Image (cartoon, rainbow, N blue to C red):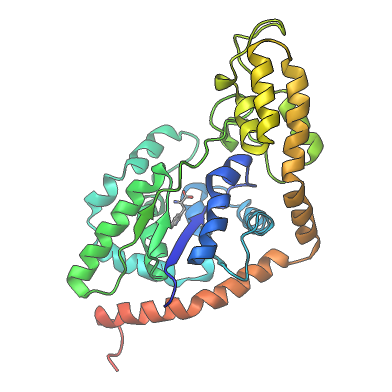
Length: 332
Ligand code: TRP
């Protein structure tokens, strides 16, 4: 019996953070064992919002592949490819645009929100409007059965399902309606300032940064704001230092930091020193592997070209079915 397919993609917008590690990477690593996994770099999706400055895309694509592989996404198990290496995604987006009513795209919540909230980018372009449609094409083109999505992506997946149903209703049952899998309570990782970890808040710890950089960030972290003096009892439940420590540290050691904080027996500076050491230890294997991969010239591009070749049969099959069903082939 063949395995079901899982697919997910990320826009290449920068190096990955500890937030991605707990939010996505561990999950992707697990899914590749159970499913036939397709993981792709959504470089065209990066263009939709960053079309005015595309210089970072190539480097970020390479970074993402190195981060993935160093994190244990195994290119021998998972098909890792770049969206733009499958130009049929554009063709399928165009076919899907025939069946998708404009109003469906207009009502996608992230579309309105981002146009209102992101002031520094011009998002009035058609490409950005087509973002969810291209996402539907990404999913449909490999006949993916499941797509792991965070809460923010759920409406995009719902739209994909609606478009697939409408397409199938018109042209025959050939696209697969994908299921969302909401990852197990993907640990929410706070940034150094206590807000959600995000590159745009400037509070991120990058997986591939140096130990010195990590230590410096941890030493500057926000702790329980009510705890002014070492003699004040602290509340670990609202302390981002504790929250990260719980994710990466030895459970009994972390429990002891929790206890001694509550009774004001230990101070935040000592805890930061210990946490920084533990975090660097936790990331050491990843960092060593990543540095080794980065030394091999062209490694990331080899992974991507191998992935492009491996995704090809699925794409060719699906596209010839679609063209035939829409009568845009020769009919023979
Ligand atoms: N929208 C996703 C993001 O915000 C990227 C993406 C593009 C994607 N196509 C996809 C995710 C298909 C899952 C499936 O990064």
